[in-house]
Image (cartoon, rainbow over all chains, first blue to last red; front, side, top):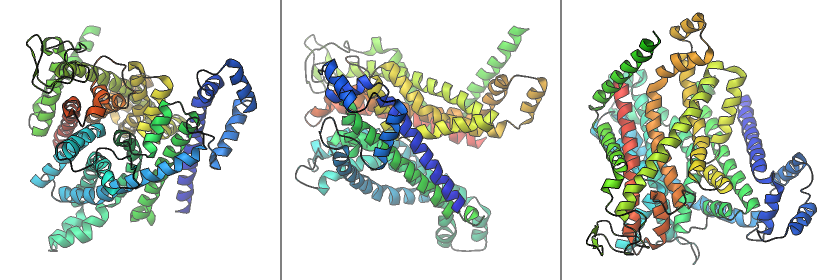
Length: 310
Length: 293
């Protein structure tokens, strides 16, 4: 178990290091373009050279990389070109907002998709199973921007009961959180549902479930005591992987609803060539994705007794 | 001699495809999906005939669906903020979406299959290197990857294809690798090795055709996802340059007016969702059918 933990953690660190090298090479190999991005397109060549000299950009690439990496690890990402404040000051607030949005979505996605998945997988090929399967395919087929448009058309334009933007200008407002969360839920729950269904359907074909049914246990007991515990191990990993998808989804949703979150910040930074902010956001996004994936892997081995006691 | 060996498998391939379509008829879900895709394919091919107006012509701005054109035609789905017919733009836009969707998916498959075959067949250090690269790319939230790539290299058709290939090939590689690990110990592979066939010939001729089932299902799902991606990039303003119609771009251009003129954004949304739904339903039908026999 400890060896496995160390291995997973080592893999995570190695992945993060590789990602950091890739990002650094992508953004900071061409120092002329770094200077142009920071000083703006109308800066003179002389200004750029002075700035590059002052910031130590004429040193070899690998020395700059290690210095940059050391700063990143200690939380110093540099200064945002656009906001003129340290990147961390902008980013952590935005990340907290996205965490609220993500938590709201997950709080619905997890129970809903587990319930639907178990109901569908319990009796494979039944009417209920087909209905839930087709429903989850249909909702997953609607891209987030499309469901955002359609839901806004319904709830904002026709019914007029929800606000169309979620900029939270008047402080935190739960009502403004409903539409963005709903879009994320609609797009994501179908996948978790289908994975849960597959896991449940597989468990239902095993010998121990047949034994439990044949020895005359009530169907309820078979499902609740024997099937569920084994069927819910795989969805745990799937749910942890959803954080990766959620980080993709928030870019679209936050952009559409003008929600002041991490995804919108990343997009803005990329479009404005705000180089240090993009680097920081990308590093944080990958870190969240890799960390949740590692938790998923470790949790899976812990939850699965066949591996745990091996 | 060479001609007979070349034509024989092609015929049986066509036969198999026919049999596959026959099997698919048993799945209502799959047939619905195939029907939707066929509909959009026909629309895309017949776009010059079907579109009532030129897609980039500015006629009458901001007309609701059913509005009349000055020369007598009717804007069935209305016009957008600068007066272009939405129906015509939808019809022409289907060409863009299907073209880039198919090209990008095909490129991703070409790269993913080669990576997966090499990783699964050679094993060892080749496998470790390829798998590590794939893991690193897959650790990015996919949209973050797209935004970074497109914002650095610029928005163009080729860059979209490159970005989709870069982001999707690792996932395809993993599937192919898993299939190859299962197939490479079969007798017919050993027979080919004994005959002295080269490694790549064995992979392409002996292994790949036998791995096609799961890959066909996956390619349908992935096609749907690539279409979503192209739409999202257009929607974020990172897609194909204007003015030629593309569904995501149409939504982006009019989304600020969505609450006053919903028809400008709702119809492209329905179009893209239906096309993705078609591919997802087809994938589900194919999987159902392939599990049956």
